Image (cartoon, rainbow, N blue to C red; front, side, top):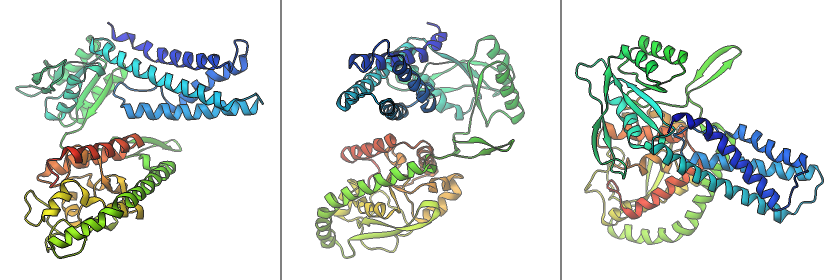
Length: 467
């Protein structure tokens, strides 16, 4: 099945959505075939709102959370538009029936989109709606994108091979254990030297070129990009996998002067700040009232009984915009002079018996909801580090300070991805910062809920680094 069937993907969605909307309003007798004004409004308003919410402008790599958020925004605005139409035209309005029809529309569109994406996924797995891809470079920086393409057949990427100037070029990928692809390793075809890539792309109908920045010099990059522009081929640059990069660069104009800003964050929007802070206040109050209120006196007795010292362990940590704050935890160690400099390690002799339990179950972190209520932390965000650690990590990871653009969190994306607890080597902190920056630049309410749910799940499953 040809990749050119892609031209029908968006039109099918649009027609199906409009059919669901019109069928629902006809079914509930809100309109008739001769009610031209209302029919025109129903369909045109949906399409106009869709233009701004971009529900039909999705890429093949779009995440489920993004799709749900777009549809929710579309539905809310559309519902307000319908209500406004009834109010402005003085039509009789049955609130109960209107709610019913809007719910039917929303459920119908959600179900259609779920079924449609499932069908599209299977279509791509069978070889349809694919994009021909070539890779330029033979180093490890291309391995993550190659692994993704070779293991996610449902996204429809067909890797034709790679070009490299290495003497013994070989580009491997790791196959996951799925029903479609047996577990193991694989290689892709070597197609020639880098200078030959443009001719190959032109003669073989290539759709996208992925180019390793670290292997191709600036002059050759410009040549490939210029070739792509002239031949309608997308050229994408892949940074060195050892570095940490920001993705959210955006172009703005000062008069006619183009200015490239490094990043535009979701948290820059006042409405996002408001709702995230509102969620933090409500969530932290619920935990303080229904959990801390009864667990604190129990832990007071248990902690005091085993070792002398305060109930709470207080430590200065780095926070928003580099401002430090006092972070609260239930004390899990005997009082010692090393706590401000030394991180906790496996089988740390400083940890008490009750301390092992509360650390394993993350109960020791619960007092940080007080920090959240005070506005020093958020429920979800990059984990705050000790000041001594932050000073070291800044020298190891060039983008380390980016994580301070938002409030630190009790849990975060890096933690649920396995990068919590002890930092054993440079790779641990590099990967942690990568996930932190990804979270900052791709925040959504759905992502926060997923991280919270995953955190709770990990507590019951147990984590290797929870010590």
